[in-house]
Every structure is written in C-alpha cells, then in structure tokens.
Image (tube, rainbow, N blue to C red):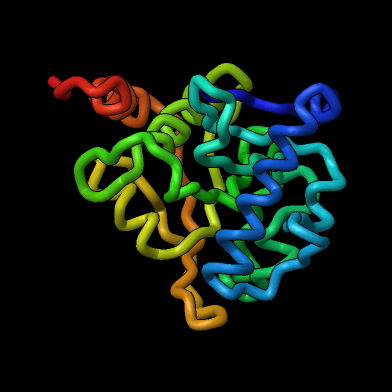
Length: 202
C-alpha cells in the first residue's frame, strides 16, 4: 500500500514519517556514508521543514518498506541545496508542474520480494504510484537527483529519462534527470503493474 503524506497530514502520520526519517538515516548515513544531517536516529534536512509530500510504501502490518520525498520546484530543492554545479546554470526548473523527487530509500531487510532486474517490489510499487500521483496533481515532469545506477534501472523498464548532468560526490556517481509524465510513462506503468501484483506482465 502506498500512503502519500502531505504537509497538513504529518501529525496524523507522525509515526510513519518518523519511520521514514529513520530509514533515511540507516540508508544514507549508516550504509552509504553520506554527509547528511542526523539527529539521534533520524535523518532530515531543511527541506523537510517546508511543504513537501512523502510517498511511503507500507505493508499490511504497517511496516515501512520504502519512501521518497516530493518537492515542488517553485521552492528550494535538494538540487539547489546540495548539488551546486550538477546541471548547467542556464537550465531553470522553477515550475508548478515540475516536482523534484529525492531521498528515495528502500528497507532491504523487509520481506516483500523482488521483481526482474533486481528491483525491489516495494520500490517498483512506489515508483509506479508516483506517476499516478503526478497525473492527479497536474505534475508534468519529475526532476530526479539520484545514484546513476537507479536511472540505468529506470531505463531498463522503459522509463524515459533526459540526463541533465553527472557528478561523482563522496565516491558515488550522482545523476540529475528529468522524467516526463506522459502517455509513454502511463503505458509503461500499466504494463508493469502486474509485476507489483505478482503476476506476469502482458
């Protein structure tokens, strides 16, 4: 199940949001060794203090399996905050229809199974749900700052990505890509939905 927690709903979903911050700490600080801001067992930054949406994959027992943060580019983004020089200065992404996706992380200890190409089922479910969220909210593009291997994996599943820049940061190959939400991604999502449900795709 995917739960989208928007700013007014954070208090109602406080435990789940804290679980997401804890997962971020384990993934980005403990496992990857990134220089991120940690308070106790939580990883959160200044962007979490501003309006944003958390997309959270939750199992039937209420356990968090994966999460992602969605930020409209009309406000400060992680690209501006932490990745100066990743894309050319002439490129501008400030638009109410372009949202940044960041802090995508997966609990690899959670039972849930894998689909082809080594992609976690919960991660795939969340990725597909994000396209539905975009269509419901008038989002035409996602701006993604992520590890290069994640964009390569997206390409294997037919997700179109316009790569805007690459950098090696703290030993990690980081890429910024623009992902359209259009008929092509909608077709891809329909074809891949059976994988989330444990069925063979058509």
